[in-house]
Length: 210
Image (tube, rainbow, N blue to C red; front, side, top):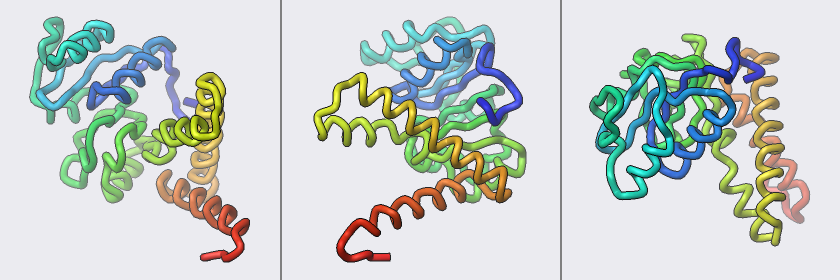
């Protein structure tokens, strides 16, 4: 949010995919003042400009139903998620959701990639040119990997969550700093950061593959 020209309080959120990632992202953001206005699963979409009840949506999914069973809102096909006007758009379902042919349809100001490779590289470039900030997947959704690594080392849940918060915030700031200083895409800045760290890690090995 530090890099955006709007605040989280009252920000309209749309989530594609209402599984573990999408559901909890929506819950976290609404607890901090945002409003979930749209959501999608494999069966379709639901939209309500006044806000959706996350507990009700979660209950539907827990009972094996689609979010399209939610009554208070406008229903559409799963592709309609691209056309919902919002401030924050979170793809948290499948790869290549946004590509060159549909990137112009997105009506958001910030995209945070919850799924793996949900946006093609060329589509990210289009979004960047349109002034839409896009946080790459391996920066935004690295929490699971961090948690697994720390659990392997015997860390507590609270320690893992604290590390996730610190590391994701730190990495995001580093990426956005690279974007600002070098005038490059967020993904390009993220890849540069990743390569630097892999090289540094490789330097501690007996044989440096780089």
